[in-house]
Image (tube, rainbow, N blue to C red; front, side):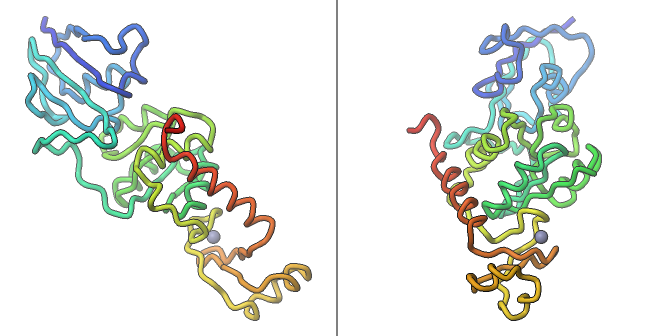
Amino acid sequence: MAQVRLRFHGVLNDFITPALRGADIVHVFERKASVKDMIESFHVPHTEVEWMFAQGVAIDFEHIVVDQEIIDVYPATNGINFPVSVQLRPALALPLTFIVDSNLGRLARYLRLLGFDCLYSNHFDDSEVAEIARNQRRIVLTRDRALLQRKIITHGYYLRSDAPKLQTIEVLRRYDLFPSIKPFVRCTHCNGILREVAKQSIEHRLEPLTKAYFDTFLMCETCHRIYWEGSHCTRMEHLVETFRANKLENGK
Ligand SMILES: [Zn+2]
């Protein structure tokens, strides 16, 4: 029998049984285990972890836990950086891109509205989401902890809320995306890029009133959907402002 003392810090406690939150957890184990497997046995997905230390020395996910170790596990927290040389995962390519799993279609549409590249299909199964995330270096956004525990997913975020607007704000805060919001550059339906299009080239597709009152149009280069300023856009602009207004937590 061996035992380890585990300390989960900050928002990682969201995942842990309430009785163990904030506590030094004494965990008894018999079989050799990597620290990744051990922390995930407490339902904390490895993607939520940014730094880990054994007796104060930085470790990675492959670290094999030994008897009497003291392991500290930290989440990513904006503004906090430990000066360590151990990288838990490869750096993400910029600009950040995302993939959401099934049932999160509205989150995908909101992120696209704000200009972020976000893949979504309700046909993707978990394996496909994981493969695409790895191959295209996308961040996985999900409510499914088991998906985030897959080893091939290196970057992911577990959405705390089940409300799409709150989820969007969570993602904006987690990845510090507020300065990068760029509305109306991406099709909310298919994630394609929007380009300005000459009115005469699409006139035949417009309703008479739209044709009479509007002159500036955008078209999705992938699905060819047409966007123009009007009540639809005003509603979307209002939504964008609502998201921007949530930059700081607790209204600070
Ligand atoms: Zn489109």
